[in-house]
Length: 607
Ligand code: ADP
Ligand code: MG
Ligand code: ZN
Image (cartoon, rainbow, N blue to C red; front, side, top):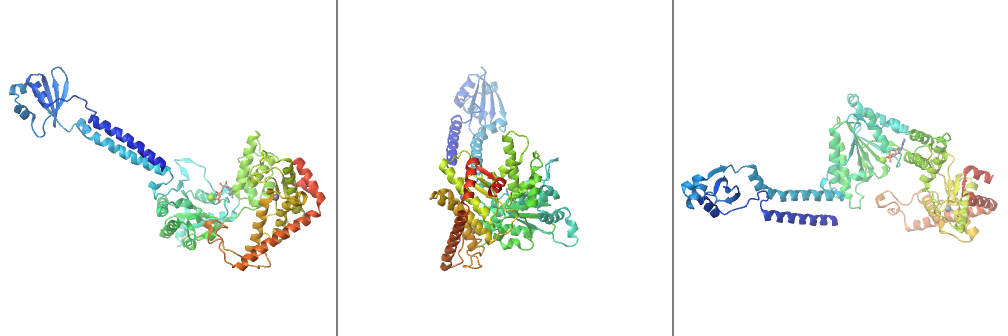
């Protein structure tokens, strides 16, 4: 806002200067000297005038000595008549050649119009400039309802761009199978229409972030060789009510014009949230936008070959109207990749990267449960960057392993030096985690222990499941709680004091215990039910918006149960540690010496 006012002032000043300039010279294009009519008459009488050009009321007087002057006559009177009136004799008039010029000459018009035109041009320029300013301020206020969708054509200007196809998507076999059908609809709609089949209008891709939803949608358009209109749900919603709706209209109009085509709406949940639950200010706007999407989808003729693909990771919050038949009735689920798929994704992205002999992508896939396709891509990318920075020509396995930790835990901070005491505390703390995890059967095995700080933590202990897990059991969670609290327990035991280093462990443990009680029904006392409904008020932020669907009595019980779980886990950790004092010291001494212990080394140590 400030800059707009400043600009306005600058323009105003410039405008004033120009206006002043113009009025001073009135007509800066004709700088001939003027002479009064009477003076001219006396010049004619004394025979000094050679000729007079008449242009409207302006007289261009040419003197015998070669000079030129300008004069004016009265409106509507003829020059000859006026001269006679001023007492110029016929002979004297005859000595002067009088020629009348057409007043519509270009010069005349320029002279007449330019003084008006210049300020006008300035005003227009000023308004244009202001508009640009407003847009620059990211309001897009002047573009209101135009859709900002990006269009990707399969082939641009004859030269081929790289087309995304299904071969660029590793894994996700079921999803691809579903989508092959969509490709066929786009390619040969007649085949289906002949049989009276209704071609689906909407496909909903559901899956966690980074699992390749956008990639799949692009691949569908690439396979079918149709244009791809990409827009994110949040882009519809602007500060003005009605903008989103008109953007939707515009987007669909564009898509229909270039049918067959794909419209991809990313983050559909940003606009497609259940209506009637909103408290936020943009709530009306979102409803209107959503309504417009529904209207557009219903308004398609069966022969309009536009298919809408939408992506979301929150299908549970979508408005049911979106999921009705005839709208997004096809649903394609995309999961986090399992080990085979991770292997395939890694292979795909490793294709254009030079790998050293020792690289074992399968081992990398084993180490990365829960990673999305985007994470895996990121790992290989980080590894390539690391390799380049070390001036090596091939990516080695340990660079990839380092990247995994970087992606998981943030970059190493070797410069964040711990003093001797802190280092010792960290070593005991991490050794405590590792030892308890090792000794409790249900806990995942240790992959790596380190006291090199990373991100915010002083050190870290990495444990990974031996095989892919989709479910977790109560026993596992109880073991996890004990492992989480083990760091804290060791500190207290050895140093008779606690540091702030354990705070994030406590937080994690408390959250886990709360989830066990309120979400998973894992407390005997409270029984098999859930507490709190989180989905209703998602937009207020997760925990904050939790809606209580239980009474005071239960609230207290929940707190008690959480505390009990944590207390028991703490006791268990202590007990486990008590029996293995020797092993603890062993781990600590190796950690203090080498700073990191890898899986194999750790197992040898424990054997
Ligand atoms: P989403 O839209 O689900 O959040 P994206 O489609 O944007 O995920 O995926 C981001 C990147 O991750 C892709 O550009 C691709 O490089 C990589 N990726 C994700 N899933 C896969 C997969 N199945 N095969 C290959 N690459 C993948
Ligand atoms: Mg995406
Ligand atoms: Zn810890």
